[in-house]
Amino acid sequence: MPARVSAPRVVNIADLRRLAERRLPRVAFDYVDGGAEDERTLRENCRAFEAVTFRPRCAVATETCDLRTTVLGVPLQLPFLLAPIGSTRLFYPLGEVHAARAAGAAGTAYILSTLSGTRLEDVKAAASGPVWYQLYLVGGHDVARAAIARAKSAGFSALVVTIDTPVSGLRERDVRNGVRELASRRLWTMLPYLPQLLARPRWLAGFLADGGLMKFPNVVLPGIGPMPYADVGAALEKSVVAWHDLRWIRDAWQGPIVVKGIHTGDDARRAIDEGADAIVVSNHGGRQLDGVPPTLRVLPEVMAAVGSRIDVLMDGGIRRGSDIVKAMCLGARAVLVGRAYAYGLGAAGEAGVTRAIEILRTDLIRTLKLLGCRSVADLDQSFVDMPADWLKPTPHPALR
Ligand code: GLV
Image (cartoon, rainbow, N blue to C red; front, side, top):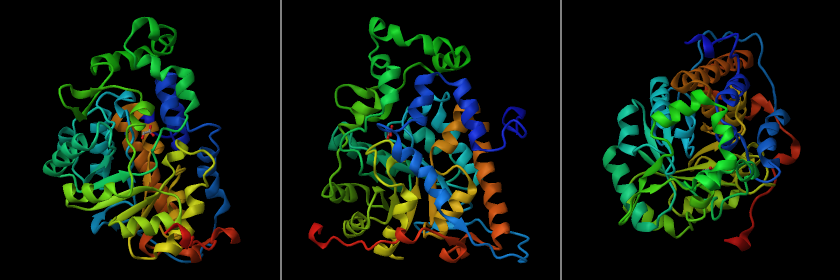
């Protein structure tokens, strides 16, 4: 492990975040670090983990700890997957390839965003573990169908349909940092926002050597080719998914579908009714509707609604292995980590992602040993206390 991401310089994910902030221009760092509006949900996603406390079983010898889980029937060495993140190539040249490679080397899965800067075939070729494709309908149904066909023939093993983006959340940091203007490719419009890029010459050299502002090679527009970079907000506005879309998506994909963006027990049940094979309890990392509850808080409601009928994953606010353990105690089969590895990528490329994974992995083992639990498969609610009002009744039959 290179010294720049080893202890004592990097002990936890917050250290990687600090290094990423130092290496990246503000516009790139804030894109991944920030959330919508007042960033209440962003903060609460992390804070919710503080409300859940452990009930360890002491004097239990656990020499080895088993971190393996299965998701969609596929065994993973770790109970966390790398979440889809748009524009990853802004953080590091060929960012998606590095992240996919690090995930595979650690024995877990990587989820590629539609809004990525690398061809999905190249990402699949780099990954030694499972890769899933996250679908936005940007460009329209035919464009999405073509991407689905490519993902299928490239060997992606699940399709993740994100359902919480009928419009982009207002990410105020992006507005202030000139994301839209920088994507305009008009020098005069870009000019006021260029100093932040010049202030990070090492990043800038890598960015330019990587081809500069990327295109979206998995969104191939008829008569145009790969969609030119547009700020993610503008792209999301063209990505509305409705429940009925799941039918044609399922017909086109003919494989496992994961519905990401579940906020309530009702939507969890609806996703099952519409044929989802797994769901992700997610509020898009606090980047969409500010003011929704943290995902950990929603997890008990979702578990009560769906039980063991389906694999339930969650994301949002995970910065430590103990957070993953808490989510699994409340019923998640695995979690998705987004910012935690993106900070590593922004700090030091693939070595940073590998370090982020390693931090979470060693956290998990230590936490299990301290809890007196041999395997993540044995985690359940008996290992935690949570606020009494977290398990509220769910059904709103009128909505069904
Ligand atoms: C893309 O999905 C984003 O949240 O920026």
